[in-house]
Image (tube, rainbow, N blue to C red):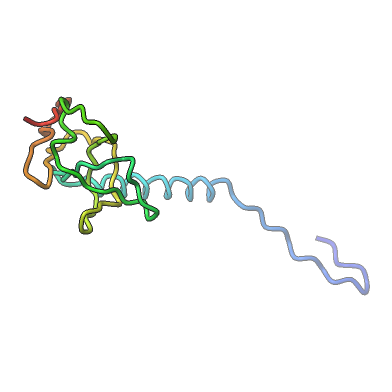
Length: 128
């Protein structure tokens, strides 16, 4: 390194961000996301609520309806009814869950209806 010219302050050396550091950060975030998703359904059992998806409220919650509305054979005059898995129930509403059916777990409604038995490749039914 050559000495700076008279009257000039030397510039600090430029730091280069390592690609390895970025890759490590991306890998860490990915690992945390996988761990979080696994923790959401870490049990062998998941509770589900039947919801009317046309009644989503401003806070993202859904109104819970009777389990019979989510049966495969139900054809009612209104609404689109789905099972909402792993949600937090607050009164007659549920939130913080998903409409995506988790696999390899036993799913029961809060009313006790078995929706899906656990096991690899198991196919659930709407209950009987």
